Image (cartoon, rainbow over all chains, first blue to last red; front, side, top):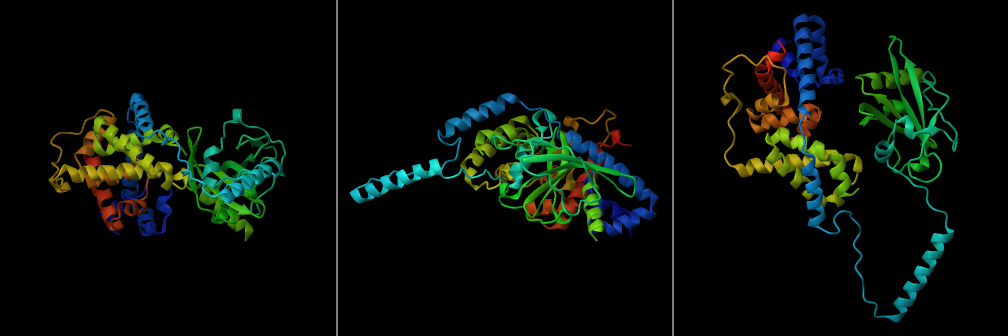
Length: 261
Length: 157
């Protein structure tokens, strides 16, 4: 492959990412293996890109404008701060309808008092937003549920002691967080956090039913970027959080597949 | 999710994106304000709160494109941007020199670079967002980055 063409193609590789491992860059990777000039130039361009990414975000912001914006939004519409379903009052002309409505309200009130309260459920996205890795906000797990282990994680070392977090403000821990580490054959150690909770607390359920095939999302905790994958195995939903080092998540997913095989 | 929460969590990101696209604080504030006003009207269309940031950024980018259309004639092609006439500054790269260099680019190149560097979108995601062919995105990325490297090379030789 022509060096100029290879370098132009490699301009699409994001810095500090695993983009270079994508199939469409296979020929470019093969060229880099044999061309030291392109390897040097590609590395230089990736360093340049990293600096650009850093500077790109350094934009000073006037905090007063955000405050003025909130005032403008408040004045734009009195009930616009919270979206609630509109309730259109209807004029009741028929006494039978009034009697029916009163009975229905009475039954509803009795139901609220006597029926068990539904357990709070969360979609995975909201769970990720509510999770914290700040130890000051976590406590020793109260063992409100057992501590499960994912099926293909036999070769991964999960800390026995776990921490619990209350997600929904009701008494008791809703999620269990445990640190883990995995010693790869290349001597590299992958570390992260495994979150577990009963599957009935998650709705809709994660699409993946195995760790190896779960697709990553990206979040920041304590200022550090993480890759997160969620999957369900039977009565448990797991979320694996790995600091965003390129390839660590893929390495762990491949390793669990190999172990299962 | 309330509009107040959206502003608290995402104002900085939306403003910074707008600034990188339009280049001035005044215009960036206009776009950021209008983006949240539009978001307030369309809040019920946001199904997944975890995608709020991407949704707001898309609204801001659409406002930027509308602003360009309203501004009138198309910008010059990339070839019309003059080559640098002096050595690139040996001073460390700062946010102002980056923005000046971005502003020299036609908006279609600037947009692609901002999506790549600021929002960390892959070239395929950029193509989907802008609804242009992947080859077009690859070409604009390559040529846009070449422009940045030529003008900011003092720091990276």
